[in-house]
Length: 76
Image (tube, rainbow, N blue to C red):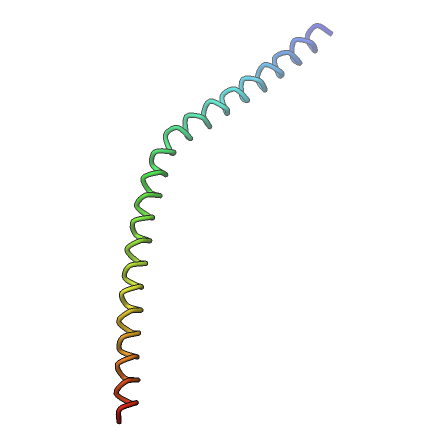
């Protein structure tokens, strides 16, 4: 009976130790990854704004060409 109680206590200790280790590892990984993720997010925002500006310029250029044709067609 004493051996069974000892094994149950050892098993419980191992489970609690694993839980504590997992929590620590998750906290450390989050602490290391978070600054990198913020950097990636800021770079992605820069790329997105550049693409938006390029698309806006392209749209304006296409719109001006379309209006130019419409005004020429109206005068002919």
